[in-house]
Image (cartoon, rainbow, N blue to C red; front, side):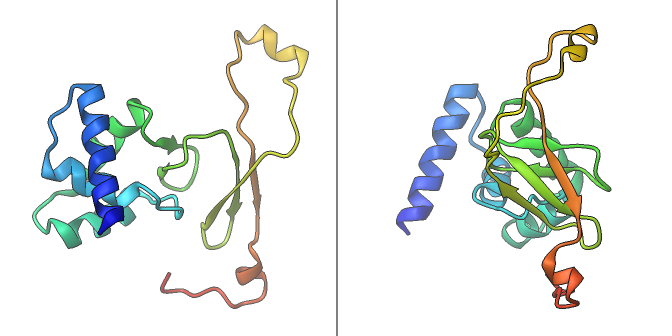
Length: 147
């Protein structure tokens, strides 16, 4: 109950800061992604949201996710088999299983210096580290297919 109140307060604070109306649709999407470490795709988020709001369309969920991403509330992860969204906006790296698609966060323990050649491309802002491999569950055949 206390966690629900904190989530609602955080949502209202974010909406006020961004000049948005606090709609039930936005709140349902907010609840579906905040604290969700699965890095949900639109379909994954839509399934969660539709449990709360059965009538909401996938297009609405997608639009709201993109609005959240543009506002910096979540990160949009492009360049995968489908777009995924990350509720962790702090600097961190990802391990991505090439077999099941699971994404796990890990802190970058090493500072990476951008190579000098990058200056020829323009002003670099950031570096993103994605390690791609096979997770332990897939490697050992213990991956839960229903997850």
